[in-house]
Length: 235
Image 1: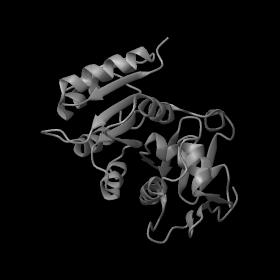
Image 2: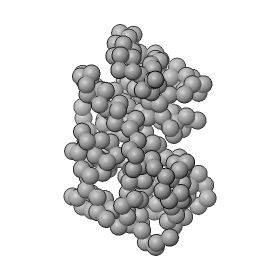
Image 3: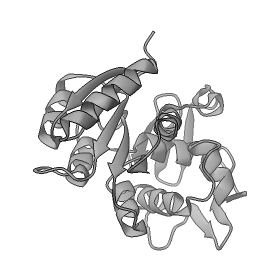
Image 4: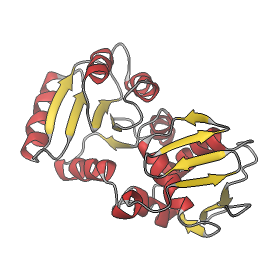
């Protein structure tokens, strides 16, 4: 049984071959694409669980391709990990802001890459189990079973990690959640210090569900500590 379907997107043939061999040996079903354009074509007709996307490619680069994936038909369910040689924080934040769930800096070890893939694909039992079917706050409705969100009756597209983060916060209302607690709950036990992850994802969620993102009503910042999901009125 396959551990999941992965699409490797890189313009270097040798990297694609190595990735295919490595991932196949770990139980994944692997396909590859030489460019962002080819990747988008495959995603339009095939189903994948995760995309490994090189940030620096000719033509449609990784950032442009990631944005296109998130705006496409399959962009909600597929996880995206960006592969980059850039180490500056602004470049990593840019990757997350484009819709990536995670990034890995080249060169990387096989064990690190596999751990990041497992974290990106992981769905904890607590997040996936059926509990309350619907959760309403203000003009926002979250369907926990279908993993769909709507604002003022209109569907709002959340990436897998955006939904996971929001869901974890919803299930711990009016409680301060530390950066480490959120990172390890949503991304996995190997995370804890990547505060920029949370900053980017919380900002994206605020843009999608808050009436005034600059003056959040629900996703509140607890300075130097973490975040709190504020329920103004119990439903």
